[in-house]
Image 1 (cartoon, rainbow, N blue to C red):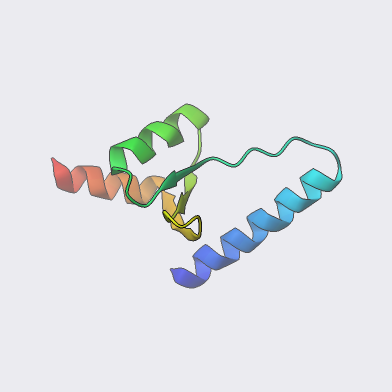
Image 2 (tube, rainbow, N blue to C red; image 1 turned 90 degrees about the vertical axis):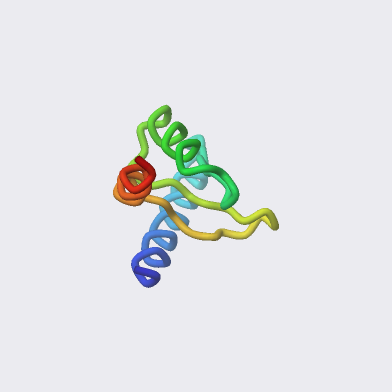
Length: 78
């Protein structure tokens, strides 16, 4: 799982850099590690994302949350 996260982040960073060099606007959508899973779900729904970048309070990348992660967590909460 960790290898997949870093692979995906690397791909995302390369795509972001290519877009920036070509003059396209770059929008980064994220949540913070202390956000509730329902907040992450709201962000993902409003931006129509399958994965969401999770940042630490120090501004470092803490990971990525996926729709599957959200589904599992909200199912367990019910």
